[in-house]
Image 1 (tube, one colour):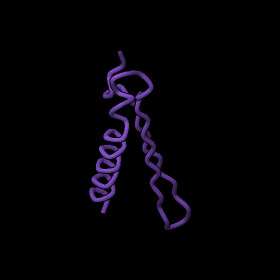
Image 2 (tube, rainbow, N blue to C red; image 1 turned 60 degrees about the vertical axis):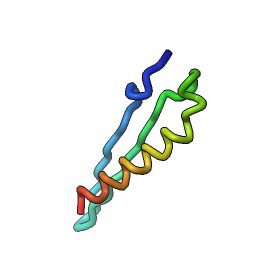
Image 3 (tube, helix red, strand yellow; image 1 turned 135 degrees about the horizontal axis):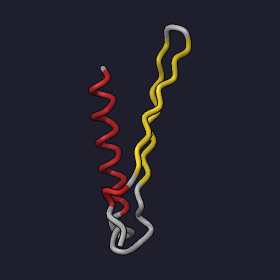
Image 4 (cartoon, rainbow, N blue to C red; image 1 turned 120 degrees about the vertical axis):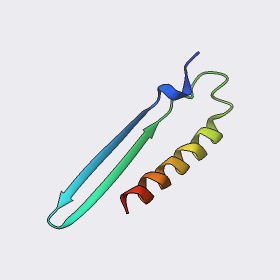
Length: 58
């Protein structure tokens, strides 16, 4: 069984002149049971985390 905490996140910062862009990529290993059934909840958790990252950058 795969642990959902074993996913990956990438934080990629791009700079073009004075503008700075942040790309956040999240991957969760939800292909196996029981995590597959919980996949929609994992997506919600990723969205919440993403909003917190953006809020921290402001």
